[in-house]
Length: 78
Image (cartoon, rainbow, N blue to C red; front, side, top):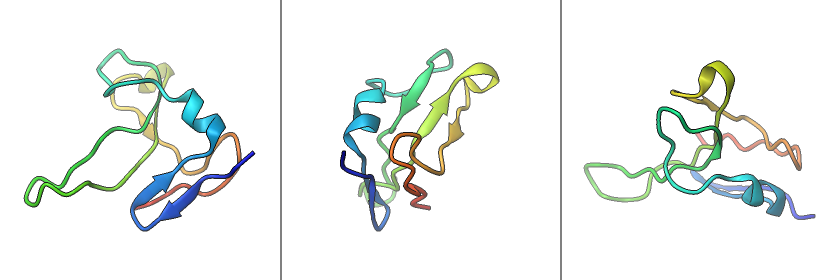
């Protein structure tokens, strides 16, 4: 199994985490793991990658995941 890798503010996820992602942008009622598309509004460049978990009492705002639950690597890019 490959492992997650950080490249500056970008993230290359392991195959298990990639399979676990929900498609699309999270909404107020979305549940699951998301890698939302982020952009810097002033420049239009891609923003920092973060993995968000939406579950339980954190369905709306979600929480940022600090490590991959599958390969155990640190995935904080901020």
